[in-house]
Amino acid sequence: MSNLFTVICLIIAIIESMMGLLGNVTILAVSSTSCIRSKISSSYDMIMIFLSLSRLFLQSWMMLDFFLSLFCEASYYEENLYVTFKTVFVFLNYSSLWFAAWLSVFYCIKVASFTQSFFIWLKQRLSSFMPWMLITSSLFSFVISLPFSWDIYDVHNNLTTPLTMRNSSERRGTMKTSLLILILLCNAGTALPLIMFVVSSILLIKSLWRHTRQMQNNATGFRDPSQEAHIGAIKSVFSFLILYITNFIALVLILSDAFLPYSIGEAICIVVMAACPAGHSMVLIWSNPKFREMPARILQHINCHVRTRSM
Picture (tube, rainbow, N blue to C red):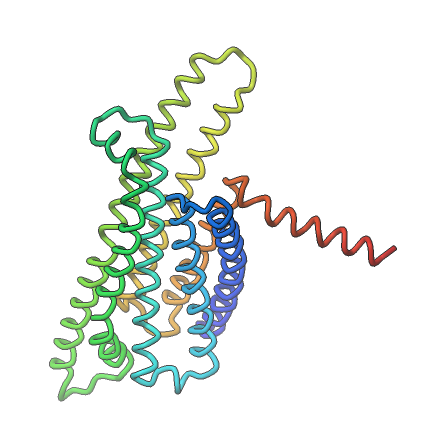
């Protein structure tokens, strides 16, 4: 029963990853086109290019990981291949978390209406800081993911190999040490972007909510498009926050080997980790008219082509 449930979850995760791939291809194409046309890379476009690229690689890697774990299990759990897959998986996840955090910081600095001098200073210098922040985040993610290659295979062996009476206490001690190292590394790679994302999202929601209340007090009885835009922005940021925290919890559980391979808990975490980046990409497309235009034009072109052929 648990094996059937795991297979179903993996199929769902693959479908979610494919949807995420489509969404991120759209974001990447629109952002890249915008940079090429303007000949100047804006901070927003740079963040979206880095974020969509990291998620394209992440979701492609996850799909390859799913297929190998299902259909090439013996080869998949060989030490070199297993370590490579998991280390690259960690790096791509960390990068994606960092870029999503920088996107939240960008929204907060650009949209929130705070009058503190430090906030104004950040707003003026954001465009010059952002390229370096993105590159530094990538390097940090790479460096912090490398130590996973030292312990992750030992943890997997300790969790999947049956204990014997002779070496059970020694093995338990080794497993606890390896798990502790992995958990510390995981916290080192995810704690800072999580704090940045949560703090900037809360500040942005607070600023938007305060501005919305002011517009409601000054309302004349007619529908205010600006007020509706603010409410829509609050909903988008709140959904980003929920998706980010959910993805963060699932990632920590997976990296700390809280569940046995192919268990129900691991399968649920995999579904969540495939759904959250895809959901975040879909919300980004839905909330930005620039991203919505491309799918609409593609659908319009397909409809015109179908009508022409039917005639």
